[in-house]
Image (tube, rainbow, N blue to C red; front, side, top):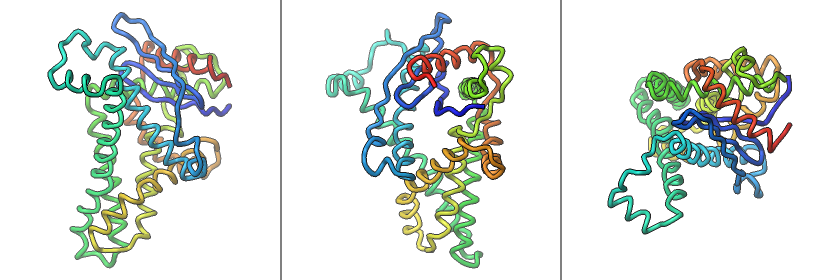
Length: 304
C-alpha cells in the first residue's frame, strides 16, 4: 500500500480531489456528462513564516480548507444546474453586484466562512460551557466541570452529525463522500481506477475530515481540562481563544494517523472511522465515475 497526500471533498453532484499545488473538481451536469475543472491552489497563509511550523500549519490549513470548501460547493451548485442563471436577480442582488462588481463572489465566500466559524464555535464550544455550568453546584471542582463540558460537547457533535445524516439532500452528498474515500483507497492500494475496482474498497479513511472534527472534540476536552476557572465568562473567552490551537493540534494528530499503520494509530483512528459510517454512504457507479474523474484530473497535473 502506498501513501498519498491527495485528499478530497464531496460536493453537490460531484467530488473534489486536492493535491499540493492544485485541485480537480468533477461534477455531473444536468445533461449527464461529467465536467472536470482544474484550479491552482493559492495557500497564502501556509506559505509564510510561523504557519510553516507544526500546530500553526494546522491553523492555516483549517482556514484555507474552509474557504476552499465553500468556494467549490458554490461552483458545484452552478455546474450541477441548481442555480438558475436565467432567473431575474432581486433588487438587493443587483445592488450588491453594482457595489462590489467582480469581488462579490469572494466577499460572499469569506462571509460564509465567517458565519460558519461563528456558528461552529457557538454550537460546539460555547453552548457546552453554558450547559455544563448548570451542573456546577453538584460537581466536586472545576476539573469535573471540564469533563462534563467535554462530554456535552461530544454529545452535541454526535447528535448534529446524526440529525443531518438523515436529511435526504445530505444523504446524496454522503454517497459522493463514500465514492471519494473508495477512490483514494483504490489508488493507495495500487489498483487501476475503474468502477469495479473502486467498489471493492472501504468507504472509510483515516485522513477524513469527519475524523478530524471528532479529534477536535476530544483534543479540546484535554486542553480545556487545564483551564480551571468557574467564572463562566472566562471559560467562554478561553474557549474562543484556544480554538485555533485545538485545531492545530488536531491537524498534527490526523496527519500522523494518515502516515502510519501502528497499533496506536489504529486505536486513535477507530472512533473517527466508526463515525464515518454515518457521514459516508455506499455510492452508485455514476458517483464513483465522478470521483475517478476528479482523481485522474488531479493525477494528470500532479502524478505521484
